[in-house]
Length: 296
Image 1 (cartoon, rainbow, N blue to C red):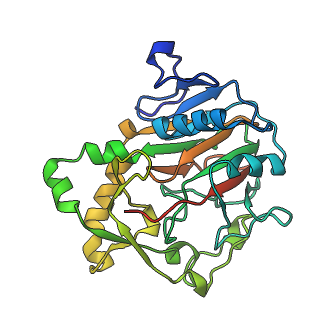
Image 2 (tube, rainbow, N blue to C red):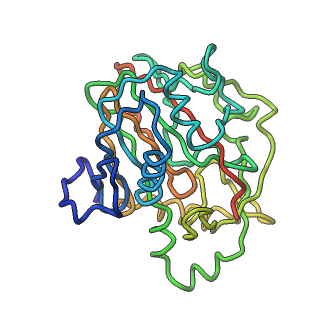
């Protein structure tokens, strides 16, 4: 079932022990709401450690009613690692580490409007992203996340054995390459088809999370068009099956945004999907992405 609202659970049902923050599970598959945190403030190492713990346990965590300047947004993100500048989408003029995810009322296309992980085509894909809602439509514009651990664990033993050791080709070419759809034609995002997007990186189809040690599927929609040493046509049946499996409702949660909300997700073990169902309304988000390491 897709979760539309986070159920309140008893304290004993919360994962782990937390002394500095409140953590309330949001959905059965993944997600938690964090209370008692003002992200505009500087935190000591113990608070940051508990936020990281909540992220690792819940895969995506949400904060309500936040007010952050761009400097504060960046400062919070830097507590978890160095920051990534998107290689295909220009950041804000004054803050190049922040992408303004903007959709105007008359835009047709939205950014992130298909299941994917962020820039998985990099040699060292991101640890995660922190998305801050500045302006949201009165209806629509939800974001969904999926749990790639669960998707892997619920495959049959035979399928897991068959997938073990296989490599997947990741590339930005289909989204940003010379033959791709020009973002500037039907959206407010600053990106144009270009030749720099025509490179490929290979990552394991089953990756091991560097902090939890758990295994998960690592497939990323249009960023993963084929398996290594196979054609796209040969790869399609398996990759299509895996993407359908990864995004089954029992593995997902759905967040209904309010202005001031912040979502922080673990890009190493989740996929996400921004719904494009709010034609006639503006939606503005600020996204900061944290560098990760090479999948293994």
